[in-house]
Length: 193
Image 1: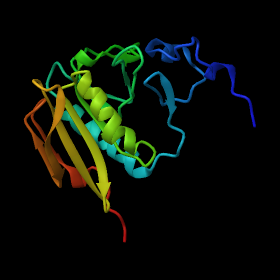
Image 2: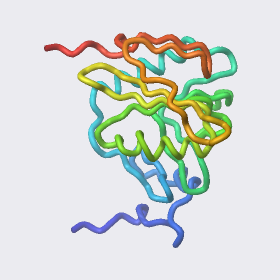
Image 3: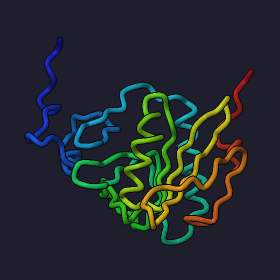
Image 4: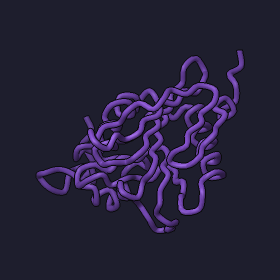
């Protein structure tokens, strides 16, 4: 068995903190912090995932009103021990080329595109963590038989949990966090049979 490199050892007995991610240049590119533990995305990404994230980012950027920015693969510092990296987010923060993370109060929408490696975290763990951080909107995008399906959630203020706002196939139309109309079938090329 190979010994762990020194950079993988937590800097303190309590484990890792959110700010530690900015001091780990040796870590893989998509490293997240969940409950004080480093989570590495090491499995290969499917073409469907990459195409969908790119198309969704482009579509949201084209329709986002002034005052909202769309970011891809940037972390959100939920608290001292949680800094997940969603596939994309919509933020009220102005563009800053040196930014490495966002605060939850700056985020209006988080989008996670499910991959086999991240399915449990995207559907359960992050769903609860983003709600606890009071991020108003969460989309979990999945694939069913070659078709993109978006599970949309809205934060219910009185309970502090996400309420399902719909499951969208084919077309997604939403009035929040801004007027959105997407042809989901055009986000990725059709599968060849």
